[in-house]
Length: 618
Image 1: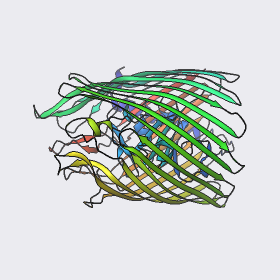
Image 2: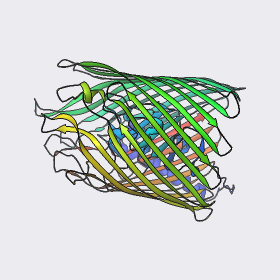
Image 3: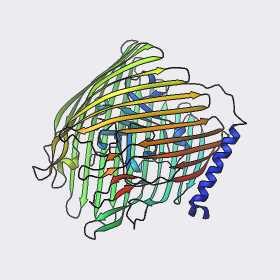
């Protein structure tokens, strides 16, 4: 495909599609009245609840945005939230971390339909390897959530909600773009009298872009393939489902060699698997019992060197929800996790199994004016013992159009297996990191088209794990951090037109040094505007970050940066959809993180990715 070697050609083609879409809209606008439905979320309370009633701040990345570009990676989708600083060490397929509201990257829990994706070796989820093919929506719960979810949920929770078949359907989608990038997905759904079945398959390849800024840098390629299936049955009093998903591939990257004193091309194979069995039983209209067994396996193997990390987690969960009165309900739950982590190297290896059990209780009181949520959790870990956290939150409606909320909670992050056992710096006596968070906010519907809201928060984190210079740099609970911040959003929509703006300010400081934490820009702005109806759509998004400190170990600074994305589609009928997308329209090259080699070099973003595609449904 000759045109793929000419980036300007594909950008010109996409620009032509965008112009065509805009011109056509001017003459073929469908004057269909806009219908507004309450967005339903599940992450905040583990039960279905209208977004407007939740006594916390939640951001939603919906299906329309996800389906707009199958090539768009999971980390790229999260960039649209002003409270998240997404740091990627290069372009497509490179390591990506989320810093939510100024907390550490391992202080955000990533879930897929309730299954934890954070592994116990590093504390991080494989964000750069998560496929987006079957995602219905992404919920970003901001603030402490350890009562319901246990460790890692100091900054919040990012939950992936997958699709469940509702009718018989099939589709095939293909998207192709710059850097020899392409992705194809196929899927089929069956649904009949409560029974449903689903299958998905996907393949993505890209030549990638240079990871570092040094003059001899070469592109780092990425490829992945995967499939998933879901079987289930839903009735009034009973439901069950079995899910399986698998994703594997190869990612190249560059690493500095202290032997050769230069950057060398490296490669790693990855594979992750998720198996989940869920069941629901309603003995009465007031009582619902939910059970889940899930298995998650995350493998990473460094090629050309004997180094392999494997993490396995098996979870058993039982939740009982009792509707006590019309306004009150109670949730009682227990989650048991069996963790097995192994790291194999030529020099040093270890394998460690750990068990942990969480017991939690949550009460909700809900009337037209007042919504409350109170909970407590006891975590019993075989290594560090018992740990208790709690949370209290409420939202009050002064009128149907004006509400205010307050939220106070504690959370924790358990030391990882690497922290406890791996290498010379491990410390088996580590305790969990602890946090206390306070938040207030309001939301107001100024007009039927205009809504705005503001949040103010403070988070204090103690017992942070870091290297102790007074004890041969072994890990210890020695640091403390205070984070103060605010978020503001304004949304406007009128029939097919829409605009959204969100702004985040947070100051994350080390209590001992008084310095800002690394990779935490104090300010971030996200703006989007567009037009969308059943046949045509065009939109643009601007994200801008202020400067931030690069590392605790040098004086490097990551300059502020901004980028613009452009998206459009044309859908002549329900079965056919054409789309064109440009990530980073101006091909802005910016630094994302210090390479950490004391040579003044940085990791770079992936630059522009222009693409066109088609989806055919049956």
